[in-house]
Length: 272
Length: 272
Image 1 (cartoon, rainbow over the protein chains, first blue to last red):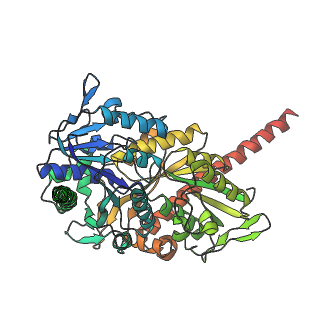
Image 2: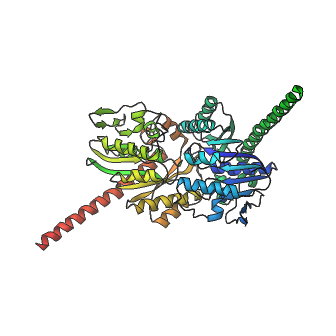
């Protein structure tokens, strides 16, 4: 993994909040910002990432014990069990076995050079996502949620679990914030500022608010990330905002670390 | 359970499709049809049922080794671990332990007389919902989904699993079918007739199509099922349609069984 600049994992407190859509469009947004981007599908409940990013039917190239990721027409490197075993991922796979298979795939994929690798984790806060999380040298985790009171608890639990593991929570992406009606009117889908509350309570920033746009469901089924297909849409712009905020946080930390190092060196010098 | 007329379990192929909202409003709709109704919360990931049906802060009455369910102001009997241990359901609970606790609660609850008991199962098709399902004498299972191509696989898997267990699938409830904009315009949220396809492929009927109404999220947070609070709304009417369809299927089967019995008896008679 030494050729990967930054690894960002996308997690959710529970299923059905649009985690994979966010992962795919985050990767697309980073790619649009002209970074070298890869996406690793650690949520093998279905070939969702593969389908949503337009890698369906794509083939891995296996060179010895190395696996070369599939490159989409947009130049995003994709690795997923779904590309190895196809849509029919055996359901019989139990947690540990599945987790090991995912880790093995990750070890064997040769990403060559990447600025950013986005990891789409399994939904929820069970052992599975947490174990997988630990097998990456993550720069941080992005938590996807919907602005529902009932989601509060899940998000808070997720944030606390990640922190307990000594991994950094980069921020919260609020998905399905509002619905864009044909007239362009924006209608809040759930009402209430629950995400705001979790953010305050946990001191984790909100990276962006993604509207619900029926267009995305269609594009996702066609394997076209909205960010690349319809960059002028409001939802695409919101995804770019999220990506920009993540880059800011990650690279600021990087600089800080560099500064700290040079400080240390300076100290050593002065001690001589 | 001999005083319970019919037991209907509500299941989903994956999380986040609105399973609990459907369970709660199905119970409310049956109650509105003047049946004696109870709801059992087997999805203890959070106190969602308790909150959504207006039982938050409600107390169980424990009489010896029997537990009397909490009655909401609408007269719906509610049983949930959340009423025993409150919101802070210990996360440390692992699958088997949790499942056993749920089964024990079910055994101890004294429902007295019920026409219908609605069971809100844990999301997905893991061991947990399947094990719990087996501990009830179910009349059938209702499967909740959203009309997404990506949900297809999950629903089909769920249907096949339930059938394999020899339990009847009563039908599919399509949730989030369309969004009702302020002008009253109905905008499809995902596009495509994916539910139609699963229904054809699996020969399982669609019981109803539920729109997405932001009103419901608010009412849910206030513990007011939309069916009882705003029965005139389109979404409330759709829930009543679902309930009516379920009653038709269940009671038709009942009659058929009665007929078969009387036929048998007639045959015995004639054999004498």
